[in-house]
Image 1 (cartoon, helix red, strand yellow):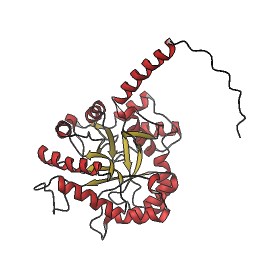
Image 2 (image 1 turned 120 degrees about the horizontal axis):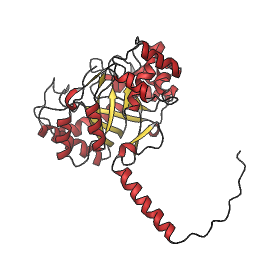
Image 3 (image 1 turned 90 degrees about the vertical axis):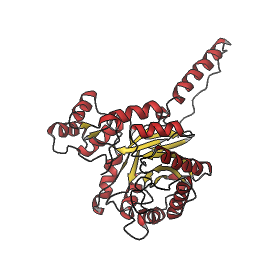
Length: 331
């Protein structure tokens, strides 16, 4: 146990000092409140909305990664955030969310100790039979959120995203109203979007009552959305990357040297690059169940090293920018 230390008597403070301290606090608080991305409890989390703190690294459950194996490995490695969607795995009975629900119950993860992100379809609406937005409105969005909660068997999630935008800004605004209603009904703690281009996001911002907390887009060393990152930062919106290892230059000698210098793997270098660009991420563990525990540990072990400015420049040079404030889509 720590040995108690002597606490000296507090010296007399002149009135001007507390006045100055109050002024500095107001300036400091105002500056930080202007950009919630900078409000963090530690390097591993970020406040995406007032009072809503999310892990920077979350388990992605899309596209070949079975939640029944991936989530237990992730939880055992210390992962406390998971990303899913209402439409993931709809080619199998129950879908990924039912599978994830069982995995969460299996490991005994307490609801309050797990940050759950889910999504509802919009521009790629599977519930309406394809990529249609005809007739979608706030009621549809609210019902979709409730369907999410039913599949996950929870009364509230932490973050709900519009999975993809519709072509019509007016339709996007109606869907967003449904998410705002879901938040008002305490079905979710925060709301955001995914795959929104800069123009679509700007249009939504002009119509929204609640600002999107997150925009989730494809981002990797190979696909670098610098303009979208800047726009999100200016608006106080957290940028979350998916497909963060797509195009990672595993065989590039310069990148291999960077990894060796930090005694980490090339994949960890590529993921650390994403974090140092100011983004959070949803990252999967692949489809090989036997390798998932090792991958989970590696994906979470990104805080023991920092990439230098020179190393970041080397990594920048291996990829290409996403033009025009775009949000790269797809895996």
